[in-house]
Image 1 (spheres, one colour):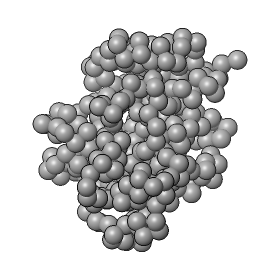
Image 2: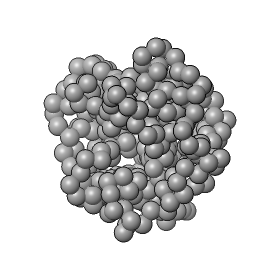
Image 3: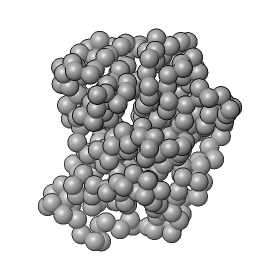
Image 4: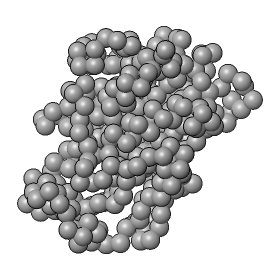
Length: 314
């Protein structure tokens, strides 16, 4: 018997495709949104037609974008959000799609009487404080928030991306708080991953010539002559993040609204290059050149029982 219908956005993405596949494998029906029919067709070809519905949402920021897609859904996993630093207009290309796409989803949820839980893919970008630098010895947790402002966000594309994830997640929490007392309001789980490594799922259509941002940085690190500086030296495997999203739907395991950071540990590009070239990394290369912060993911470890995939296995 099906565990329920999950509306999932960004299902053709690096992370979303892994989530979708696990949902199907673990007894859910999915309704996946795509920007185009071609992406939808590849997805169906790889995962098959059983327990899969697809629908086209060409523009997630358009008024009423998800109103039809959400009908009858029991859960929502919203992963769709731009992740690139190659932009010409920070506000238009990064911030607006993330914030307005989330707003359209929240509007759709408000119109629904069936959705029990929203799982939102946020980011460590919404947690880290860029004004603090490497912050040696500090362990970030779910209590931390990026203090990004709309003005600061426009300084560069990195800040723009951090703003997009911070503002979108805060909008979701504001929605939950403002709807407190309404029995139809679903619970919210947000998941904040750092750099996501691991294999691409065939349903994503990702190739060496069309990589997601994290994988592109990884490929550049292992193929370049010099090791790039490690600006965000924390990682997690895509398969662990995907399973965390699926587990977040389990109200027996996660009964209330929660925010989770996810992290397998620290890394350096030098260590990744050594693993790529010889299959193992030295202790020296695993240690960042400068002392950096870490992420304390004990909350999700305790509640979900996750055992993280190592850097070498990732």
